Each structure stands twice: as structure tokens, then as C-alpha cells.
Image 1 (cartoon, rainbow, N blue to C red):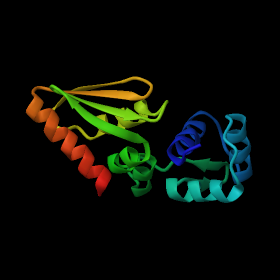
Image 2: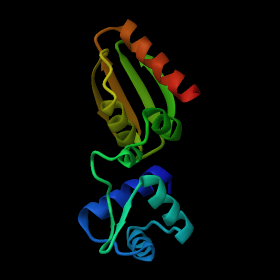
Image 3: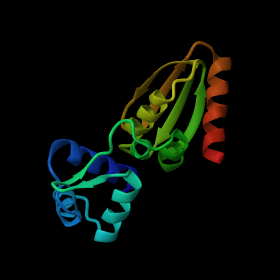
Image 4: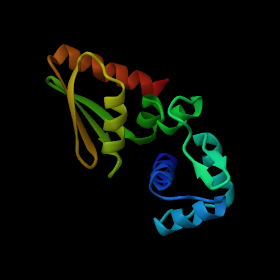
Length: 149
């Protein structure tokens, strides 16, 4: 189970139900098939910038600094999930591990690039459409540079 998926599940849990303690959060994650230690839960809470209140944990306010931790950077997502990037005419085709294309496509869409007309994600493949093969080549190089950084 990767960290991005686990943290996405934590955010989803907090949006849908109350979480009173770290142990409560750990148990709710186990019900979703995510087995973690209390130390991992504690680290996730800190890195997500969750707020502890009398009634339990909650997501930070949208205006707060920690909210950025809820969305990993495009470079992090690409390094975590991307397996290959190829150009096919005016398309860039990204391959990911099975089940991870959607996460990468969301990160790509959150970082709009003028050259990108649109993205389409399946299970392990993403098509990035551009207006020309030259633009597709530029996008592929930009993606590879993010992964190499």
C-alpha cells in the first residue's frame, strides 16, 4: 500500500465521518484494507497537517498552509507512479503501475500546461493530448525532467 493512496483514504475518511483518536483512525483504515501501525498514522496526521479538536481530528482550513500537504506535487506523483513516457504523434502516453493512472492524471490536471488540450486516464495508461507533435515532445521532456529532479 503506497503512502499517497493511504493518505487519500485518510482524507476521504475525515470528509465522511468523525475520527476521534489515532487508534480510531487506524481501525477505520483497517476496515478499508489498509493495515498500518500507530507510528505511521501519527506521521500521516502530522504530514497532512490535520487539526486535533475536542471532537477529534479534522482537515485543516482551506486557507491554511498545511492543506498543500493533502495534494502531493506533480513531481512526487510522477516519481511514485510513472513507469514510462512515450510520444505518439501529438500524444504523450504515460504508463503507470496498475490502478494508478487516475492519481497521475489528477495531478497533471491540477498543474495546467498551456500545451495540453486534455488528458484521458485508464487503469495504467494516460493519454495527454496536445495540438502538435512538437508540443507533445515538449510535454514529454518536461515530465521526464520532473521525474529526474
